[in-house]
Image (spheres, rainbow, N blue to C red):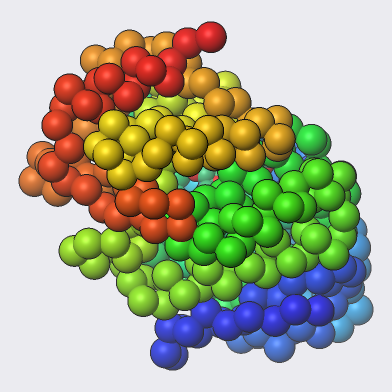
Amino acid sequence: MRRLNVALAERSYPILIGDGLLSRADEILAHLRTPRVALVSNTTVAPLYLEVLAGGLGKVGVGITPIILPDGEAHKTWESLNLIYDALLAARCDRSTTVVALGGGVIGDLAGFAAATYQRGVPFIQIPTTLLSQVDSSVGGKTGINHPRGKNMVGAFWQPKLVLADTDTLRTLPDRELSAGMAEVIKYGLIRDLPFLEWLEANMEGLMARDGELLAHAIERSCANKAEVVAADEFETAKDGGRALLNLGHTFGHAIETGMGYGAWLHGEAVAAGTLMAAELSRRLGWLAHADVERIRALLLRTGLPVRAPDLGAARYLELMSHDKKVIAGSLRLILLKALGAAVTSADVPQEKIVAAIAACCGE
Ligand code: NAD
Ligand code: GLY
């Protein structure tokens, strides 16, 4: 088992990565205030993994309230959040009950927001079961739901007490979801870890073939990068750089997700196409060479991710991007690349350059 720490003073917590961790009820029990959990999952993940998790917890005397939601990004809504509140209240869960998220990023974000708000906040544990959630969404405490006008527009920062990533669960993940997670893995190399990017270039076929050791290393390195960034700028308030850099490709990507309708493009797919838009814009600003952009494209292609964005029209992209959470006083801040492995926040990009980069990356 690999063990990392997210260093946030009194809110610090461990990330455990390894195979067979779902049955390590002892690790979970050690982080419960009382032996009582509300276990939030969905109709896809629960039949696969709820029994082994609940069985282990039951054996060590933990009472469990299962809450099973419909599956999909389209259900990351107020309605699903209310289903969680209803179930917590019906089961008389109190402030010492720990909410446990068992699933991908959608379940993690929803359950985390419920934990942040139920009775003004209850303890929370993340058990991520997709590559994307194991390398990104389960770490760092961003929780929330979508709004028809924009992705993740309503939410809260609420750190978990523990992240437990069982790499065995990735065996049942559909190929398309594995690819989507790889977009966020590649992100860490691009924004701050060139040696990791080079390692990914050397090992991508093995990773996509689900080699356990390679995947565990990629998850550990991704989480180590994320933990460092979050520890330095938990609430994304740094003037330049900081946690916002984790959003490389996301301003364009969120526009794709919202513009196409939630669930049509997977989050990681939208991030992949958005990353190439950010790279193309960085090239147009004279920061990246053409060969750098091609290097990113080649790596994304090897994961099966989309490298062209849907043609929503530049005006629609700009409108959707104007809702981005990185907008300050009406000014759009983009995450761009000064070089491979070195991202920056940039608030003064000429609009015509953004429009040209969008046009160059859209369509078949
Ligand atoms: P997801 O949660 O929709 O999971 C993808 C699909 O895989 C779902 O159908 C799910 O039921 C299924 N699934 C999950 N685990 C499985 C398994 N082990 N075997 C088989 N099927 C499994 O999507 P995701 O990619 O995990 O997460 C995307 C979400 O995460 C988006 O809403 C995005 O906004 C959010 N996100 C949040 C953060 C954050 O910091 N909070 C960061 C990145 C992304
Ligand atoms: N996924 C971006 C963040 O956690 O800040």
